[in-house]
Structure formats: structure tokens, C-alpha cells
Image (tube, rainbow, N blue to C red; front, top):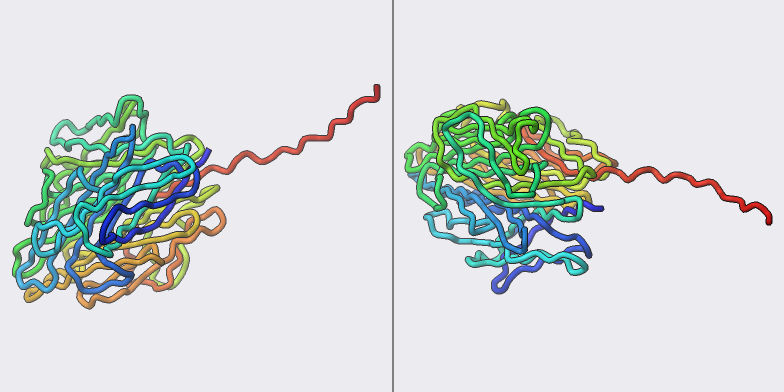
Length: 429
């Protein structure tokens, strides 16, 4: 039995597909991807572009979904875009229009001795880095990307993943304000969330919003420790907010959502469902970044396999942050059991009346970075490290405030301890 994970990245080639070769019998089943379009590590002023998605290959058929957000840098009047779709793993605009500048799709997965993941590039931005989490192994029993439509009534919603799938142990959600599959010039609102199968209701995630066509830029952010799904418009606290119900209420082959806010509905919500064996531990939580250089333990697992971290520049969870002058900043990072790590994210300055200050960041050596939008400056970062049976964030540069982050981890339970068998002495004939 095995749970296999790899955190890596791939650069968009000038021609051809990209094949990511994996260790023998890795047996890939799911991919999580995110990109800001940078071609090297670093950060600073740029059109703020971000895309996040996931893909599976259940039944030798590709299932994939993504969302995207963009904001033009140095624009006198804000120029923003967002969207989502189920035909690509990640997709970026050029930052100036709804024109697609980068598209990356899952082409295939292969198991066994020549385990691999193959990616195609229908639209190329040569050298652009796409960060990847690849999951596989026999302890990942099933994985599927699918979608449902959020609702305004009733307050609970049963979602069937697939017949025979069972109840997923970990669910990742994505939602953009554009409820249909499209890229639109509009107020840009995206939400990334996750939740786990457990006896109590739960959900975590963040939402960011960017005002379009504004002479004075307005932004907001919301990190929530009790919502796996959250959508809204503008500075509202949210129009569609839901968490995973206690697993006792779930259908046999799916999950249930409990809505706390249902102002709007009818939006397509793509998700990734992961079903793991009893050998795998799934944990999640929320933390506050230290303001002095120190280490923080996320979780203890017998054999740490993967940690994924979401963060914003917010210090209080559960309500929209519209007060800070630099309030829209976010990132996604990951580290695997071999301490391979990646992170990337974006930011946009609030309250700019002459020219927007937008930017992105990318790192192949950090799991978390925070940036200051008005000055395009790095002001906090941490390594993701496996220390014994712990996943740790080891801050090498402490941010100025206790910004919040959220995380989920996968770990493999240790095998039973070997038992000493006494020598057997044969009796003489």
C-alpha cells in the first residue's frame, strides 16, 4: 500500500507536450496546478494573473477544471477579468483583455513502471511556470473532478460524486463570480476552498475581489475558517456561503453542503474529490503567521506526504477586509514528504486613484510568501519542512502582522511494528 505525492513545476515549452516522469509504480490519479505566468522565481510589479485548477484521469478519461483572475498593472482605470471552465487545467489571460495567453491541459496519465503525467499546451506562453501537486498510489483509492450548481434553497444540498465512488475524504472547491464557463471583463471575484469528511461540519478557504472599471481601485479579501464555498460581489460578506455537513448526513456516494448564506445561486462549482484508504490521515487547520522568525508545526503524521497552504493578507477571519490600504494579496503553496516546495500568488493595491499597483510572485524554494502591494516588496516567507513526523512552516522572514493561513495535509500511517518471533528448536528424533 502507498500514498505517493510530488510537488514540482513545469515550464511551458516552445513546442510539443510536457511529460513528467514519475518513480516506478507512482500510479498518478490527481493533479492540482496553479500559475501566475512568471518565467523565473521572483516577484514584483506585473499584470496580476492567477489560475488554479485540478485534473483526474478516472476511467482513462480526462476530467479537469480551473478558475482565473486578472488585473492590469499601472492602469488609470482598473481593468479586471475573471472566469472558469472545465476544459483546461489552468488558463491565463494576457492581463489586458479576455484574450487567452496560456492554456495547459491534462492529456493523459500512465501507471506502472513508467508512471507519468502528460500535459498539452493549446495556447503557449513560452517559459511560463506551472506549479504542480501530483497524487497517486494504491492508498488514493479514487479521484474525480466534477461539478455541481449551487442553490438558493433548501439550506442543505446533496451532491453525488459518482456511483460507487463512496464518500470522499478530501474535497477541493473553486468558484468564480462568473457563473458560466467564460472569461469576462468584470468585477473579479474568485474563491478557493476545501473541506474534509469528519463528524462535525467544516470548511476553509479564501475569497478575493477586484473592482473593475474604477478610477479609484477597490479590493477586498475574506479568509474563512468555517466555509468551504464562498462567493459574493463587491465588498459584501458573501452571497453564497456553505460548509460541508457532518458526514453522518452525507449520501452514500457523495457529500452534503449546508448553506449559511443563499442570496444567489445557479453558479457552476467545480470540485476535486479524493477518496483515501484507512492508511491515510487527512488533517486541516488555520494558523496565524508569526511576527518574529520562528517555526510553526502544522500537523504530525506518521509519514508526512503533502501539505498545501492557502493564505491572504488578512488578520481576522470570517468577514470581508476592505479597510486595509493593501488588502488584496493571496497565495497558494505546497510541500511534499521529500521537502519539494512551490508557491505562487498575486496582489493588487487598494485605493489607488491614478494607477493600479498589481503584481505576482513565484518561488521554487518556499511554501509561503507575503508581498506588500504598494511597494512591490517581499515582507514574509517560510519554508515547508518535514521534521520527523511533523510538517512545519519555518519562517525565514517574519511578516509585519499575524496574517492568516489555512492548510490541509495528507499523511500515511506507520506500518505495524515488527514483532520478534522466538527461535524454534526442533526436538531430537
